[in-house]
Every structure is written in C-alpha cells, then in structure tokens.
Amino acid sequence: MHLHRAGKAAYLGPYDSKPPAKVLDPLESQSYSSPVEPPDAPHEPILTLPGALTAYIALIAAIHLRVLLPVDLENWTIDVFGFIPKRYDSNLLNITFPGGEGAKVWTFVTYSLLHANLSHIGFNLLWLLPFGSALARRFGAVRFFVFMAVTAAAGAMAHLVTHEHTIAPMIGASASVSGAMAAAIRFAFVRGSFLSFHRGDADAAAKVPALSLSRALRNARVLGFLAVWFGVNIIFGLGSISIGAEGASVAWQAHIGGFLAGLMLFSLFDPVPRATPHAADASSPDESGRV
Image 1 (cartoon, one colour):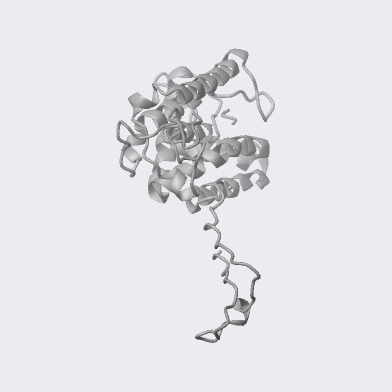
Image 2: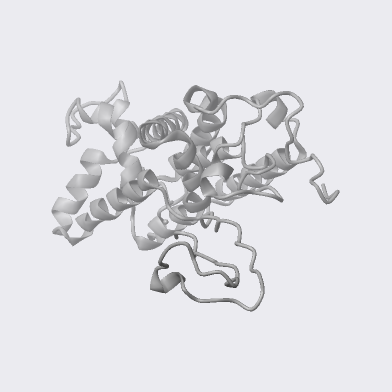
C-alpha cells in the first residue's frame, strides 16, 4: 500500500498651510506630524494555496469520505480504483478483479487519489504544500493536473515492474508528490525562487527561469537534495518500514518512479522560458555577498 494548503493602506503627508484641492474622504483626513514613506507592497505569503492545489486537496478529501461506507463497499472501491499489479499478470487463471478491463487503464491514476487514513493524507500534504504550491502557480491548473496524473502513472509503472505478481492494492499520492518535488527543484534554488535566499511574492518566486536538467544535476544544492531524498527512500525500502495502516508498507519504488518522471519531464510542462547560462542560481552570491 502506498503510504503514503490589501489593498495598500493610503498614507498621506502632513497637511500644509493651503486648503486641499478636493474634499478628502474621512478615512484619508488624518494628519501626521512628519512625512511618512509609503511602505512597499505587501508580499503574498509563500504558502498561500493556489486554486489548482486547493482543488486537488479538496478532491482527495472528498474521496476519502469513502471510509464512511460499509466495509464491503469500501473494500470494493479500493479493488476497483487501487493499483493491483496482479491485474496485469499474463498467467492469471480464474481470478476476476472488480472493474474489468477498464480498471487496467484508470487505476494507473485513480490509485493516487485514495488514501488509507488521515495520517497517510497528512504525510503527503506535508511535502506537497511547499513544492506543489510553487508548481501549481508555475504550471497553471491544466498543466498541473496533467502533470500529477503523468507522475502517478510513472509511479504505478515502477511498482508494476518491481511487484509483478503482487495482489495487494497500492494507493496514495506519494508518487505524484515525489514528482512535484522533483520538478520544483529544477527552479526552487534559483535566486528569487521559494527556496533561495532572496525571493519575491509567491507568484514571482514560482516563475523564475528554471535550470536545465544538466545544470541542475551539477548544482550543489540540488545534488544535496537528491542525496537526502534517495537516501530516505532507500532506508524505507531496505528497512521495510511501515507507515499508517497496520501491515501497509511504503511503496518506495513508486516514489522513485514518480520522482524521476517529474525531474525529467518537467521541461515538457514548463511554460516559463529557460534560464540563460549566466542566470543566477543557488550558488550565485546575492547582493550582500552571501552564497
């Protein structure tokens, strides 16, 4: 099982000795003892959820209401919409899975919308909120949803290749979350982005030019992120660590499948022009001389 969200205030200078040229609104009629510089426009919080990500989370939450169904019906939904490698076994004899031939197609994506419990959802959202928010802002709704479906399918394929005869359903969004993380690191450390030293508001941080794949794989911070991410997943795999439901192990191969798909297919979805070879990246010093 794959276990796996102002307008600017008007400031006026002091009244001078001449009467105002027009009648002021009462809210604007206060005087000040000294000139006040208007503040910079407030930056939007970096984790304000874009509409596409909000809709994605709402869909997962709505689907999770299946736990209120009778046990037999709930198990049926997992069998119909969860990803079962045994469903594709060419040596299958006298075993009929719910969903028929259609389930061999839609379960490559639908499994990613099912979760075992609230802790399973929470664990995925913990990673999706920062990386998925930036990606949804950058891609827009349509690209974002297609991307999440493609990385889910890549994760399912990796799970199928490594668990050919497994009959237990795999569920959870972790492959797609991993893909979103991989895609986001292509621009996350670029100056002005959401993991850099200097960043603008959420929209500006999400739309900085991305690094090419070759440059990203030479970037020290990207390589550090990759080392930690793969290390954690290898530990999960070698240790057979379980999270959430009893007896449900982490489908770490699906994580890696989704991650690699997100990392390599990012450019096919990215609408922002590519960074020039001399564009500032994570290792470039900022204005204060820091690196």
